[in-house]
Each structure stands twice: as C-alpha cells, then as structure tokens.
Image (tube, rainbow, N blue to C red; front, top):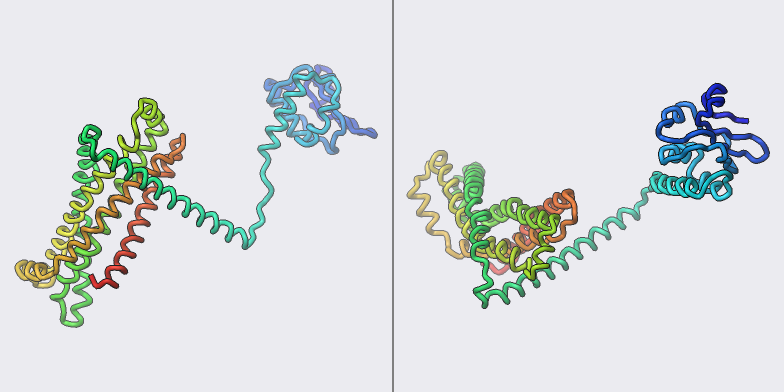
Length: 382
C-alpha cells in the first residue's frame, strides 16, 4: 500500500489524504476534506502516486470544492481521472460533475505540442499576409465607394451638411497642424540646401542649390512630408476617435436613432482633410524654400534677391504637380483612418492595434502612390 498523507497521527484525525493501493488493480482512495481550507496541507504532504490508478474509491471523502478538485486532477492527471471517474465508488453525482468539469478545464489549459518549423511554414505565412493585404485593399475600395456614394447623396441636400463638424475638423487637422508642418519642412529645406551645396561646390555650381530646393519641394517634399505628418497625426486621431465610439457603443446608438455614421462622422473628416491638405502642402513648400533661403544667405553668399529671382524662373507646372497630389493623399489617409476605426473590436487593446495599423497603412500608401506618380510624370515629361 502506498500511503500519501502526513502520517498516521493525521490519519487518526481523519485528515485529508490520498491512498493508492498497489494490488492487482491499483486503486486511489480519497479520505477527509479536500477543500480550500486544507489546501496548504494537501499540497505540502500529498505527493503524486508512483503508479497510475485504475479505479477511484471516494467513500472516505467528506468535503470537496474546486480547489481540492484541481489538486486531485494535478496529482492523478486529467486523462487518468476522466478515465476512472465513471466507475468511481462512493462519489455523488454532484462531486463527479465537479471533478469532470475541473478536469476538462485543466485539459484545455495544457500546453500545445511544440511546433516543428518547416520551410513551408514561411510560404504559408507569406500566403496569409498576401491574402490579408488583398482583403484589406478590397475592403478599402468598398468603403471608398460607400463614402463617395453617401457624399453624392448629401451634396444636393444642404440640410444634411454638417458645417459645424466640418469647421471643427478643419481646425483640428488643418490649423493645429500648421506649426509642426512649417517647422519640419523648414528644417528639411535647410538640410537639402546644405547637402546640395556640399555636392555642387565640387563642380562650381553652388548657385544651382536654389533650383534643387525649389524643384524638390514644389514637386515632392512639400506634399510628401505633409502627407506623412498627417498620416501619423490625423489618421491615428480618426481611428482612435471612431474606435473609442465603437467600444462605448456610441455607433450603435447612432444607428438606433436612424443616423448614418458615414454621413455624420466620416464625411466631415474626409472633407476637412481634402480641403486642408493642399493648404498645408503650400505652407510646407514655402517653409522648405525659406529654409533653403536661410542656408543660401548665411552659408552660400546668395542674396535674398538673387534667391527669389531664381525661384521665380521655376515653371508653375511643378507647383501644380505637387498640389495636385494632395487631395488624393488626403482622401486615402482619411478613408484608412476611418475604416480602421470602424474595425475596432470591443477592447482598448484593439483600439491601439488598429491605430497603429492605420498609421502604417497610410504612410505606406502615400509613399507608394508618390513613387508611382513620380515615375508616371517622368515618363510623360511633365
């Protein structure tokens, strides 16, 4: 007989114990109270049996709760306990049900088998990512169509225009972004001018630094830097705002009242960004050229009058190319930010995940479209 308790003295006091007989059919016998009050004693004095039990005798069991059941499952093993419970003697139906429930719960918590890494796993992961990207693209196109159709329905009906929300969003994503956009593009313009002058000085063509700054900011840097800034600043704000409203069930409340969340929440944000991004782009172009002018005046001995004269000779089509890309970037940034907000689940973690996703997607789409536009315009010689 294998006695697993804290000694004969405690046996006489009917303390909790587990006794495993070592006959032809090893049998586990339960004795005393298996409850939370006796858990410390059980965990300290009762050890797992050295041989698996083939039957269970609970006639000596006086009390049982979930703590004792969990310890018994741990000692005998969930599979063994589930196997011997149907034929257990001295066990009421309530206690048998409790042991089965605890055993099933502990089986589900067991660690999964180790995953063997294969080269095909990488291909499977790549396929999943490609499919996820394709589904996201299709979802974005559908959301774009839904938003534009709602806009087309709302335009002929001035009573449905949200002027107050539009002005508030223009202030939030446009006016409040002017300082950071102007400062960043000023510094980048100064850096571009300094690097251009460093390279062109070897060829005695320092004067062309002005053209470098003007062309780069009018065509690319002005709109690209502004769009990236708003992708990180405004798209994340849109996602967080709409995501918080979804978590708080405010979107469901709007639908219950017969209000369209697309018309009420998405259109003001979309129109505000489409209207303000070209203006911010123009400010970025001016700030970048001002930064180049400061470097030219202080380091390159190019006077302000000479700088302005060279800038005036730049064709206006380069300004139009830069400003023409701004509404498209604004449309995609606003749609991605709002779409990710609507995809938020019911937790704060989901809000953070989709906010990060909206920023990453917006920046990626902006850079990708800018590269495609640059190649197309170069081939068209515009």
